Image (cartoon, rainbow, N blue to C red; front, top):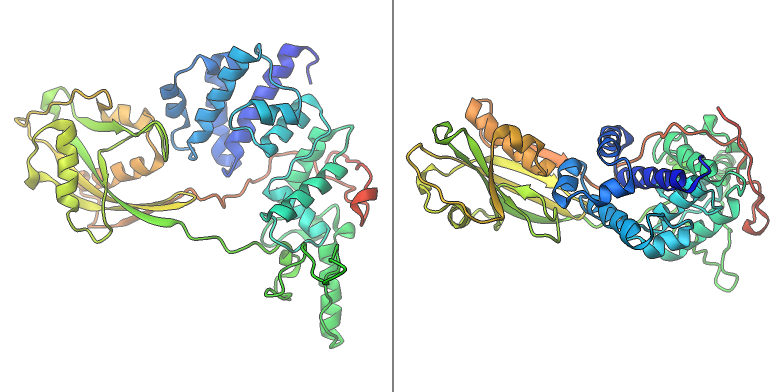
Length: 435
């Protein structure tokens, strides 16, 4: 790690960008985006001077678009209000920078500045739950706070950044949600979940009753706030994946939108597509999309409502040429949005009038590099398929950007000694060796 202040700020910025991009997104997806981002904006000052349009354009396709906007907001605050220096502690990072939560603050502070502070992401939470046989839902406020406390007691003060990355790596590569590689785990001898599996197998073979969890059980009631709920008894088939038991996720709400690819003919200066800009807040804020209107899933009045929306942007249009082409289903973290896809290729003699600053005409080449979402690119593929004769009726296209996506390996070192104590109060710092 560089010693001078400028290098530390640059390192903190690089960690900041990588951690934000990696939130709920696979490393394989992030690599190219990260490389392009750092090449275009190698410093906080470069990002602070960029336009939101440029940020959205580079982020397009990565999902969770507010992350890019908040990164730029944070960069501007550092440059304009903090003298160009990134806050040095997890506490000040979280307090001063927009979009920086507890995890991101801990990652920046430990990796870039060497602060002995913990991080708990989904991978680390899973490792902690299994090593300590915590079966309750990690998203529960009480359980989450216990995991953060435990992680803070375990972090190696001499190499906190390496320790935190190693813990994340352990969860990403070995202690995985399904089919964990227990025989390859460097902390398997300390894993209470693994011990519980062995005990349960012995109980079954000897026809003995199941063993109850006792970790931190409330003495007055016998109820343990860190154990699986009584309604979810031990499942022998799950093995160590009994820990933790996550609560059932509420299914995303379903919405429907009618959207139209409106294209001018080549004779009018080259084929161009009409794009309109979404509001500056809310879902996909500030991105460009084909004219769309929210409709009922039943399909009633879709054609009429969409035609009216098109005419608001482009003037009178021939209703008979508006054709339904198919649908695209795109699942966000909390919304399952079905796009009913329409197409309207204008005749050469059809006049169009578009003067709104919230609309623009783009060539097909410009569309593919514009700040548009993955869903809109899927919509355009349906339109292109119809134009080239490869689209068959109402073929459904599924796109998933749900928050359940996992982080694959980060290529960091692993642990050889971990979680030396049964009690958090006497847990020592941990040593690591490189692979």
